[in-house]
Image (cartoon, rainbow, N blue to C red; front, side):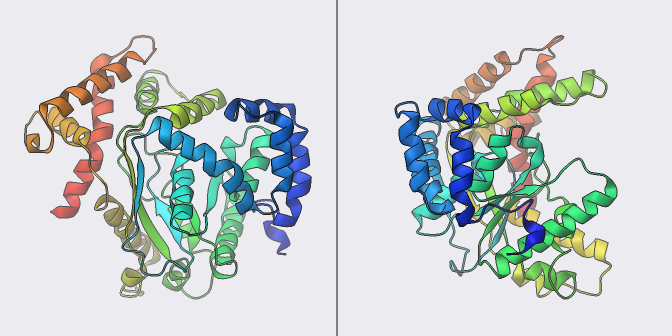
Length: 381
């Protein structure tokens, strides 16, 4: 057991009995468990928890079923295309665009289980772990903790430790990982990989920057939600940031985002693997300055995510409205256009804010749906 990872890693299976007892005794956890699984007495849930001997068993007993319910009730289906994944036995670092705090990694694990594969370990920011029971639960659910809000020196130490942990997870544990391409979600859906993520990944491992990144088997993953249930909250945040000096989201805001993200309507959802980037890394010019290398590698990941988006009628309608054109009218019917128009109107109505700027908010909503198409088109030029 490598002691330095104890604070951030998922629990080991032999630690689960103790953690289960702590969760079962926590009134806040009891309340949430009973609201998420309402038809089963808590004593029975507690018994089922105690019977789980591994994290995967816990996921299959509880998380898998809950996520399947969310797919059934709040989406029009979730699909995965992994044709570009040449070796399913390998452990990969899936780097994806980030739409939903919980479901991006949750849906991915469900889809992998359905393909007979292992679930992923998940990088999760400690800013979301606002109650002790949440921190315990995510570590039972194969998450490792990304520490935020540290001083510069502490941040460096924390990043280096996390990098060593991720290299250890891929190389020694042969366990795939999911990490978002940036800290926080792209509010306008203009997805870009933060180079700081790559710099962190290159802190661990052996050899030069390219060797270290090749060890991670980076697999870009494009996630496409037809509708983002939190879009109106993101639009509201844009106006608040514009109008209120120093505006920052609160912990309560994060909880509302999580809840609406989970139980809001998402339409169709698609996951598309973009091929491991080791082919590109093996041909990159290693003599380039480090900064240039990171920029090139981030661009490669972005290109593979953007070119693998699944585009829906709403993306084309939003683009045409935003640009004042009808260039893409062959990509949607009148009915689909009306449906999207109604959707945008309903989302705008949900925004409760002083001095509501309808034009600004509508433009921000349309931008969220047009940007995936704009980025996709840029990969074709």
